[in-house]
Length: 327
Image 1 (tube, helix red, strand yellow):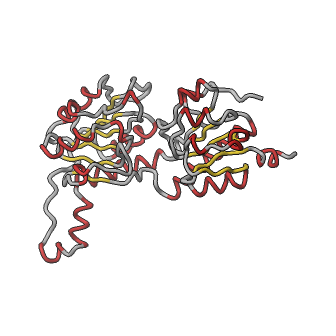
Image 2 (image 1 turned 180 degrees about the vertical axis):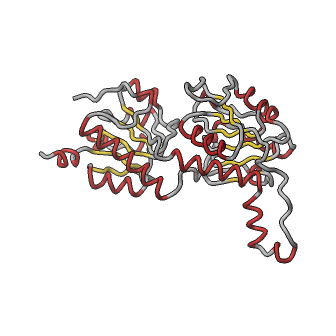
Image 3 (image 1 turned 90 degrees about the horizontal axis):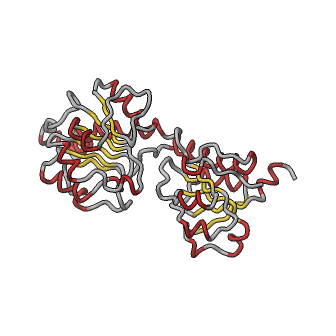
């Protein structure tokens, strides 16, 4: 058989909500098997026998991996992979890949746009024009906040955090950060604790990944340290924020404003945040341009192709980077 014929015999499981371009490429390259959702209860005997890879937006848990004894690779669509049980994958010698780099600049652009919207109240200013208020009521009220003189802290100084920092430097804003560890080669001031960072800045941008170590890391204590002029932006994961504490901080004036693109239980947004006039909210659109989502889809599928042709991944997650293909 040719290489193309061999790939066409490889069964890849694709949940129904997967992105169209990637699903089409998988259909044309592999033997695509559809499933309603990533649920072990839906796995058939045929899937158990034949599936060697999964390509998915959705979380892949241990039960799903256990249900597929021939599974070699989980190709996760997105840079964040906290919804994949990588510990179980590691234990079972299953490779996990994600799609870093190709979305970095888009998400950084969104973060800066969300920051400006939050500080300058631009969405409500546009509504003021569109609903006729400008014509009948006069100029939109002056914004209470400004980027001028602000000090920015970034929680999570990975690829996206660094891209945001570069943009903010061009705005003339000082940047510092908190990470699990100091990043070698960066000149930005490093704070060993998130509270220390919050105390040193008045604008906190979270780009932190999800997972147990960051669960509700941005809590009432951190928001209080940020202060009454504080602005909080979250472009990372909703699970990193205590949303009840954030809603209370916005209502009570503990901080001045917040801009959020991610939430703990998407697409469900707490009513208290929806009601907050000092919150700018987006429906998780950080990487959501046709250009970037296509690049992410291509990288997701290219990981599958590389694994099943050259027996190596292109972008393995750190936890499974050591996993070797068998045979």
